[in-house]
Every structure is written in structure tokens, then in C-alpha cells.
Amino acid sequence: MSKLTIALDIMGGDHGPPVILSATLKAIRQHPDFKFILCGQQSVIEPAVADLLPEQRARVTIEHCDDVVDMGDAPAFALRNKKQSSMRRIIELVESGEADACVSAGNTGALLAMAYYLLKTLPGIDRPALVSAMPTASHHKVFLLDLGANVNCTSEILFQYGVMASVLAQEVSGIEKPRVALLNVGEEDIKGNAQVKIADQLFRNASALNYIGYVEGDDIFTDYADVVVTDGFTGNIALKSTEGLAKLVVNEVKRQSQMNLLSRLMARIALPLLKSIYNRVNPDQYNGASLIGLRGIVIKSHGNASADAFYYAIYQAMQEAKMGIPEKIKSKIETVLLEQL
Image: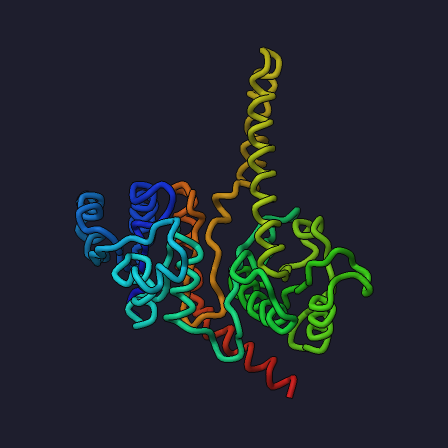
């Protein structure tokens, strides 16, 4: 069986190639069952891979790209004028079948525009969505979407999101019947706007899904649902608020632990517990939002991702490539559509 291949945009992200290359080398060394295509400036990439072992280097291909999509480039500008960029090239490799998945930490809008233009959506899907796994009170993950791909969503699109994310939860988390919920301002039937209410009815009519109704924001992390569906405007705010709160808690614990001799002593005693808690909520390990609904696998990393965080985005791409997520979403959508006829 031939090795699966991951294409990586080495030039994307706020911190540039050094962070991306550090994560890439880790993935190359730890996953001998994968090949990697590194897209970007050859003069930057070559020195970084020079120290790889011969077997490791044999699994790496470098594709030189003259152009770079800047973080400030408008999506339409990048789509028209950055055709030789590393970002566009990784998507082209997925489109041609030379790569099984791709990862970028670059300009989100440009990545969405290029992926949508080049890969197109699966049959029965109107718009792709950004989805990511989040921690819960138990050791399970909850898949939250949309995280910003589409700020305005119709009821039908929200329904499609639920179908797609249920496949992701089923395959990645091994849940036989993922619990799907709609994010709302209350759990009562009378709550919510028109789009949410119509989407709720669409979910209730789909016996192929394990729909459990509405959830409020404070239930996202309680393990009440395996999938939480909302529009990109609300989802992005929920995600960024969560990440900001996690950083606040970590920084406050650090500050309080250094206030005086007693607090430093208590912090030292509690260090194993604090590390365990931090590892559970550390945003780095949840980096890597999947742009599901396309005819290929595209993973978006945070632009300000650390090397550890970008590694998790690469790992997410490898997981989805192994499971053939797009084909399984296509099959699920076909089942649901037949049910509605």
C-alpha cells in the first residue's frame, strides 16, 4: 500500500517558516508511514531538511513557489494574483490527487477562497464549513462549526453542517451515533431566530442523525453533545472567546503563583496537578480546523500557532486522510437526501 501524502504551506502564518518547519520536521520523524510535499521558497526549506536521515529525506519533496500570500491580502486579490503561491500550490496538489490532504497557517480568507474555487463542494453541500474539536468536561471532544467560513447561513446550510460534522465525530472519535445539537439562546422551542427554528425542524425530520435539540453556550463544553452547529459569526466568537479565557486562566495562575513565598511554595506542590489541567485545556492540541464539505481535505491552522500547535494541525490532516473523510461525508449526504425524497 502506497504512503499517504500531506502537502504543507511552509510560508504561511504569523511567525513564518521557522515555526512551520519545526513542526514539519517533527511530523516527518514521527510518522514514517507518510510522505510530505513542502511548498515554499526552496532556499528556505532546503537547509531545514538537510539534517534528516536518508530514509526521512526520501519521503520529502520540495516544490519551489515564487509567491507568498500575505496575511493582509484580500481573498479576491490572492485568488487572482497569487497563482504561484505556496498556499495555492498545496490545494492544487490535493485537486490533482498528488496529495491526500493539505495544511496552511496562512490568510484564512484567501485559503477559503482558493479551496472553494479549486476543489468545489461535494454533491449536496452548498458551502464548506470550518470545524474543530474542543475539550469537554469528560475526555470526549465536541466538534464545533462553523468557525468563520460563512457568517450568514441558511437553515439548509446549518443542517448540512450537522450531517458533515456527525461523520467527522463518528470517524475521528469513534462515536457510533454522535449527538448533534444546534447552538441557540435557549433550549425552549420558542427561542431563536427563524433560521435556527427551521434548521431544528430539518434535523428532527432526519432519522439518519442523532439530533438532540438546542444547546446554549455554556453546554458546549459539558459533553452534552458531540457536535454543536451554528453560523460562522457566532462560532468564531465562541471559539476566540474560549481561547482568550483559557489564556486568561493560565496567565492568572502564573501571576498568583509568583506573588509571594507562600504562593510559590503552594504552586510547586500543586505543579503536577496544574500541568495536568493545562494539558487538558491547552489550545495548541486543538489547533487545526478542517474545511469540510470540499472534494478534498484542507486543514487551517491558527496564524499565530506555535510549532507544537502546527504539528497538531498536520496530525489532523493525517487522521482525515487515513479515514477518507470527504468520501464518507458524500455517502452520508446521499443517504440523508434520499431519506428526504
